[in-house]
Length: 341
Image (cartoon, rainbow, N blue to C red):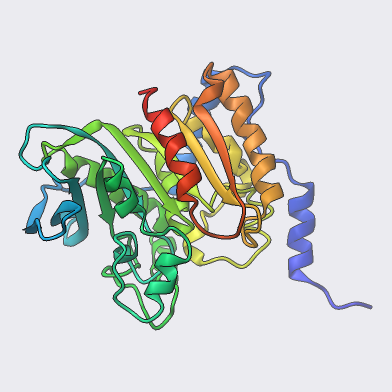
């Protein structure tokens, strides 16, 4: 008799399972959106707003010839200050000009400095140059007001360089024991960041875009599902069938939302983003977010956007390599989507 396999048992359940609240084009669209939103927020359980996130300016610098920089922090929960960097194209600071905003979320790395193209630790140079991960520098060069925000358990917020992938395991389990999720906390932090950006006259908070790669892409997608002020979402190397990726492959604990797969596949949650533009970026050789799982779930996205009456507001970008961002292909599509706002 072969040894029992818990993994096989779980896979058997998953293979036979149909998410209870998957998108059904034959059903009332608005009713599905309402039901999915209620269940999703119950599962994600982001912290409620309990503070007024007024930015605390740490320094303002014009030293870089490419942009002006404002380093600030804001309180997202009592006692927790989130650090961030606002980059503005030269000549914009205190000019009276308002620019569309791009918030960039770095994934599992040594911190948000990667998004700024700044190496702080061994291996950072390779991380930056090997995958277009300095996306905040890219965005400000394109004329956007751009924000790099540190995510909980990464970088300056209890990240562990020694672990190599951030220090998110223990905070993830702690959040679960408190009835929370770390990804829900990260989504709440983005919401409080948007509150804080209202204090910067250069930032047009009516045109906020959110993007990131890997863990930053995950936070981008799940945040866009619960924060309507995110007007464009561009998750990179994160959107994929839950069955093919998060369920079947080893991922960091911060990717998991208890009970999510019982009710939804990844594509179904686009009900909470449409009609706002959604740009899914992936790599054809990404080993942890397989391309077939991406394509299959994007078919659901297309059906949702068609039902919402905006079939052109979603796009799939497939890069010709692995787990990385694809700047040259992605930013032109972003610019076109921005025109729809």
